[in-house]
Length: 218
Ligand SMILES: Cc1ncc(CO)c(N)n1
Image (cartoon, rainbow, N blue to C red):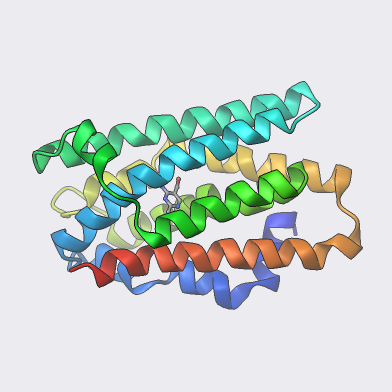
């Protein structure tokens, strides 16, 4: 078991509330309303801007070049991801300026500032644990949806699912998971594990709240 599997096993209810959320189920079935998806996607763009800052903070908190590179890769992936959001929002006539002018929802503020605070108050391991549900979780969700659906060609959420199930994103998540494991092997003591489970569980619950924000908006 790597550290990610251990964290997941120790925070199973929070993890499941995130990856098995009703929003994810409806998206997979193609029944999710466009209004819910649109609210989610605009907020997710704002979320990604703050998460880019969190990955940049990970670079700042790194002493080793290998850790700086890992943070650089995470930051680049987050910025690339925003292209998907801008492309999909453009179809609704929303420009980048429109999206950036949207007020942040409380769920967006809560999750992003929680992670940034883990990075400000904690060490690099705490920050990466707070970041883990995001990148590794979406890779799991995307892959599970894509495997269940099979042929995505007529699916209303094909672009979103293909993005996270795609090789590029899967590779980023695999690298993040490996890096987290190396970092834990280097700097985690067993006494600290319970604290890290707290952080991982909290971040997973905030992910679930983020989906809920989309559902509640329709
Ligand atoms: C809320 C949220 N979590 C994770 C990801 C994956 O980067 C995302 N785009 N949005």
